[in-house]
Length: 252
Image (cartoon, rainbow, N blue to C red):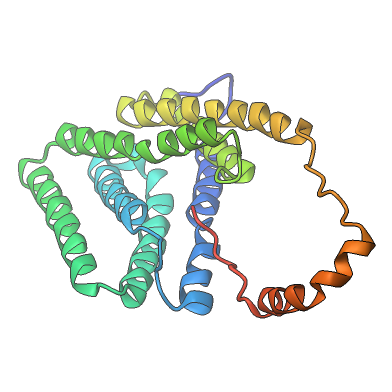
């Protein structure tokens, strides 16, 4: 196992494990909203959590089959596997259509089980690595959709800076590790992740600046002489506004 400028890849992996686990815990507010506030999955989708669970399964299989040189990947993917299994379980429990969600889960389970079984029976690390890499690359469809939304709305509301920065740093860390151990299966998706993460950060800077510079529209003041005639009309509206439920949901 090589080094990069005298830095042990094991030390790089430790940083990557910490960042990766922190990133896998980032959806916790979403599931607090589902389980405690909404008691329903509402408009949330299970797709990113199922995709992440599938990726963790394949990378865990890859790391175990690869042997001691890739054992650094096991802690992160083992913890992430448990975390995303928990997310999927909560989603299924609170889903208004458990049958449809269950079918989606079973399809994902069958696909991963088939890939893992073929990899183990054929003892083909290349096959498992290729499948894991493809799954990981497909997961970047979500950031692309978010970036498109930012450009269309000219707003960074749906692209939190902390999440983008965490994803970028995590991808960069595992990219360095992949270069150090010469693992191109790990290198390709993390190079892609680092690239998209950098684009997200740049977009955030550009559109946050645009939002910050935009003047807040001022509501013209209503003359006091005109307010007296509409007091009875305003009262029901005011009461309705005060009693209307507030939306505390957080969409990803």
